[in-house]
Amino acid sequence: MSIQVQSLAVLGGTLSCSYSAACVGFLHHRQTNVCQRSSLSFLIPRRFSSGLKKFTSSEVMSSLRDVEMPEESQGIDLSDHPDLYRVRLSRRTGIEWGTDLSFAFVYVRQLEPAGSADLNGKIQRGDQICELRPVADGNKISKPINLIGASFDNVMTSFALLDKSVSDVDLVFFRGTKEELIKACKGDTGSDSSDEIRITVNVKSSGNDNVRQQIIKAKKGDNIRKVLTDNGINVYQSLTRWTNCKGKQLCGTCIVNIADGSQYTNRKSMDEGSTLRENPESYRLSCVTFAYGDITVDTFPPVNAAQWTR
Image (tube, rainbow, N blue to C red; front, side, top):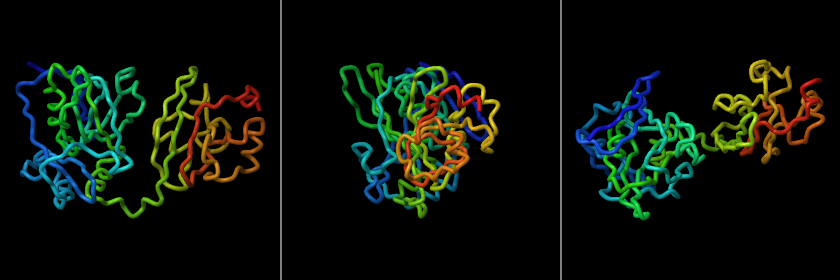
């Protein structure tokens, strides 16, 4: 029995691996315990309390030292935190997993195009895996495998040792960084949470009608163009992707539609209003638009040809 590794590399301080697995004889499965703090039923591998520190930095170990660990759990309760979500994917998830050089806290590094995770539409790069629950033929759901803070090889083993009868997997993810996940486990929401907003982006690709939704955390007052481009979202249509002014309000081509929450953005200036005068009132130049509350943004809204000739 073996594991077929398609890619395994350390890139810029991260370890990544994508694979197709059946069973692995030489890998072993570690026990897990529960992290339960402030009613948050998160699950933490037993290695945090058993001295297996070689896969985890001392900083992470120190941050989790005060977490209480009951012995059993029925799985993660999604109501414990707004950034938790559960999806059902094919056993071959189409996810390339990554981790930093602590070799713990495994996250989504890439999605295989047209793979199960990509087609699901909810999973984003950077999401932290928290739990795996096998689903056998006939929709029989097994006990959860707890993966918060687990080492990279523990996560790979959990997938590799799935029984042959398992066709799908229920996965729980946390949308946030490793540091945010650790804070959530300890019941620490941070002092600046009131400054956090969510930008929901309906991302449309140029030349087709396919739309996917992406939710981005941002700070009040953040610039829309910068937030979107920093998260790999193109706001420029056609050739302006390469010929734009880089956010200096000179080209007038970074047009988005504020589908919801326009009251949480700054007012249009006379220059912006003039540039967009033939378009709906909800259209904005993203380079000069700032968000102060939760908003929904549509990329690539329909624009008349005259917009590009003035």
